[in-house]
Amino acid sequence: MVRETKVGRGDESAKRRRKEGGSSGRIDEESATTEQILEVEEENISEDEEGNWVDIDREVSMGKVLTEDEEMDKYRRGLEYILGGEFGSFEQETTVSSMLTTHKAIQHASTASALQLYSIKVEETKLVWPLHVYGMVAARDPVDRNRNILFNRKRDNCQILTEDDPYLLLTGPSRAIVFLDPVDFEIDLKVKGGVEDKERLIHQVYTYNGTTGPDGTRCSNENCAIHLHFKELDETVQATIIGAQIIRGSWPSGYAGQIACSDAPSSHEEVLLLDFPDGINPPVVDRDGNLDLSRRVVSVDVHKDMVVCVKAYPVCGDLKQTIVSGDVMFTPQQCGITEGICDLGGNCQVEFKIAWSLLVVANWLLPS
Image (cartoon, rainbow, N blue to C red; front, side, top):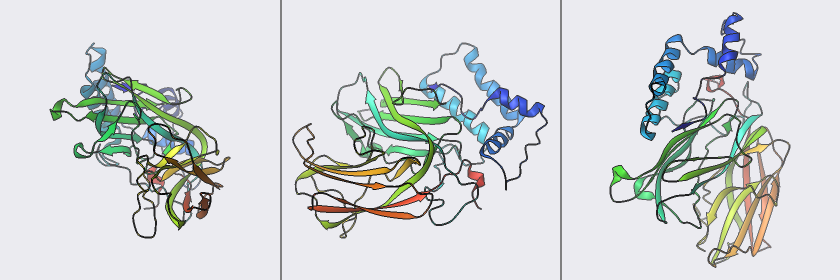
């Protein structure tokens, strides 16, 4: 079901105040503030579109209890009414780059509030482990309301979750999740079984509007609970790891490992970039030792450094006792590319290349 708030509605009282004040809905793009930009976007919602919201809400006010699929259909229709096809179809994925200002300046690009996603965990399931999970999880933010894919697997490429390791292997976001207006998390997960049309695990939208616990939030149904672990960062830039290469030595043979980043070497909140727990050498994409990271985009607090940590440990059940580790620290930038080397005790050196960029709060502000 749809949680918390309806997407795209904005603050109704603020909208009324702007209309009563005679706002024309037009601004000077040369000097517009972020607040003015978002206000004009809300004012562009037509009266017909507002009326469609009333029709949708009437279904619930009449006392009808909707199924998850009916709730999602209601959400879909509402989003399509609001967007009016301006940003493509409901299934459209975001095309906004994470490297907007890496090589050039863009007007209206700035630091901005963003959500840093750490993990997505399947909890409290009534099903029998292990779970062969497939489906999609995506975020929709005010930049374009398109899908920013976090997890996406087809039925023939399930991820096997166990009771000891119930975390989804995330591959996104593909750019920062901007938080200047409510952000939707669209969850459509299934468990592979015998009959495909009866494999639903959970199908919901959770809308984050700034009110949640310190470690994110949970949504649930009769099958399971999903723990979205994220944190709101007030002033951020985005870092894209465009290179992770073993430039000296080799990975310790037979050792498992992790590559993660955080804002402190000992932080318990890490963004997992690559995990190979079975002792097989880390995935490489070519003979030059370039590592194939699962995730590459990280939101970074401008007032804190970004620390990339590499750990190696023996394969011995669930115990992960680090044998060798190293880290490299990066100072946040608004543009350009920086490099740093992580040394694993002389046995292996990994070079990281980071592309830095500011954010934009609305897709229509980008150069055509």
